[in-house]
Amino acid sequence: MPLDEVDIAITNYVNSVTARAQKEMTMSTKPKFVIFAHNATYDKLHQVATLGMTAAAMGKDVIIVLLFWTIKKLAEGKIDQIDFPPEYAESAEEVARLLKEKKVPKISEMFQDAKHVGTLRLIACSAGLEYMGVDASAVEKNVDEVMGLPAILSLTAEAETKLFI
Image (cartoon, rainbow, N blue to C red; front, side):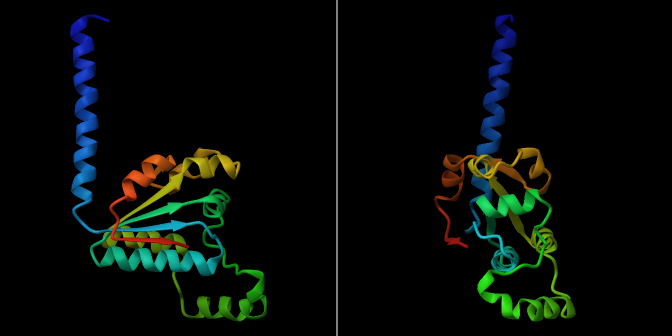
């Protein structure tokens, strides 16, 4: 490759990295609201979605980091499945009926609604994909980005709010 082409390639790379950094800095002017979503039963995912949607509507930069079981459930196409932990089995059927009767939106719909009213990013942890035996292609179409833990921690370091659900 001639020297001029190398210079152009390096300049283009530096410009793209600079543009991404500027975009991140612009996004970070809003208070960040971060949810690390580990548990994947409906009751926990409902809280993740409603908190995320509310924070987005309040003007926060919402980042939902999907970990372990949430990644697995998303990859299997079961993110909207209404399921509860075994300790709530006795009332699970009644609660599921009430959710349908009251027309509570699906988890996936709440995530999309949050993106329409504000800023919400779904990020899957790349290590979680590996540990749960999930191929990245199974989740990439449903998340904004797949990132490694160092990048996730850097992105969320200055968050006003951090929740682990």
